[in-house]
Length: 315
Image 1 (cartoon, rainbow, N blue to C red):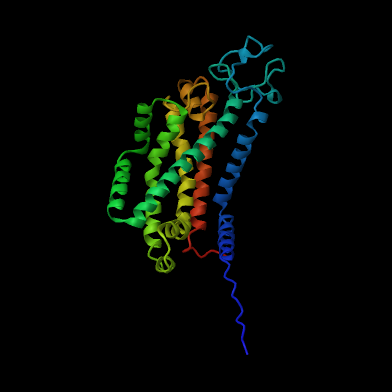
Image 2 (cartoon, rainbow, N blue to C red):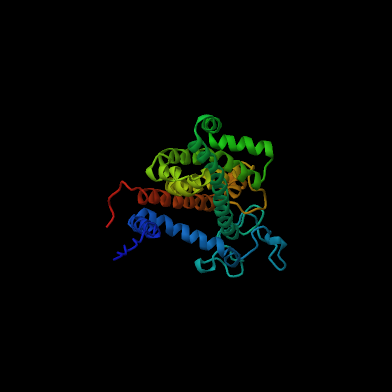
């Protein structure tokens, strides 16, 4: 008589679903993370709908618009009809800048540019840093020493000063600023990935894969890296905030986005001497930068706590 042994269900997707379900519950228990996600959600909506929400072209002066009153003055304060501004005067919610452009329209389009800057630079840095950190942690020896010594040299310089030096060599411009910020961000991700790979490569399931004849590609990219993503996600979320801040700083110095590109740092830099005569031109871009960086920092902190297996506040 032949006995049939039932096959056990070893679907690993269940573990994955369980992990992300627990992570989501932990994340939504943190009020600070919810606040950060709310701000970030609003910014994303603004970025996606800026061409509908903006009443004017962000790069065009009001004097270039046919039929617009020629008596308008530069750096005109905000004019909102509902708040008592004369009805015969064109409405500008946040006023006009020094080139007589609508500040509100430029602020809306600046949200789109800032989010693209943060995501693009962090994606570039994560890809390069993950490859370098993986090779250093997996192979060790002279490969590890060569890669990590270069990373140590990059970390020896303040990131913003190194980015300024790179942009100075390459020339001012948004693309060069993105490249510079991405380069100075690579060491942080390389070190995070290297540390994770060093600890994961000694686990039993990696040793089992190696003993069963698994090649380097399978072991590194199918066994080790998928389990090293947790700290990388947290670092990347926090890195977006840093990238946006560095980009604003470069644009403020005239090394990043060039006029008439609507970028918050460039808007601050162009009107930095008008802080007392036209404070609205400095306050609103500065507030936008602060809220964006705050949102990513709060979300990053929430993810760090939610993905930490040592925390036991799961229902």
